[in-house]
Image (tube, rainbow, N blue to C red):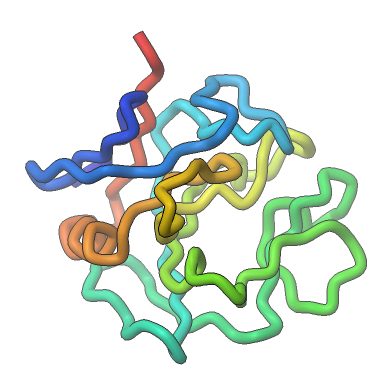
Length: 167
């Protein structure tokens, strides 16, 4: 069961459609670091991370791990750990995974540019929780907690995030 993302800001999984937030830079087949775009293509779902102090582990066939306060994600194209999880403090550019807001309380690591990472081709592409105002992401796909939880219950190790290009 794949998760399909459409240019109109909707996501479909298991016959249900959900409102989503997408990248502020639109959808691009030629994703670049910092462009704010959601990458077009079909990407594997690697694993799920969650904030154990805020949410319970979701029911899913994907691997699930609890986040820790020192978790980060390298987004520096010049560093050897580019587009990889790191521990904080970290000397190069990075995302903080243990956020004050709730966006990363539940995160699906998407297999975009990770096998192996190509410097500058985009990093930290996740499915995560949608901002309260429904605003755009920095390139990720974001859903409400109930919707992301429902989608995770329907997917498995062979599932993909399929981002469809604009017509």
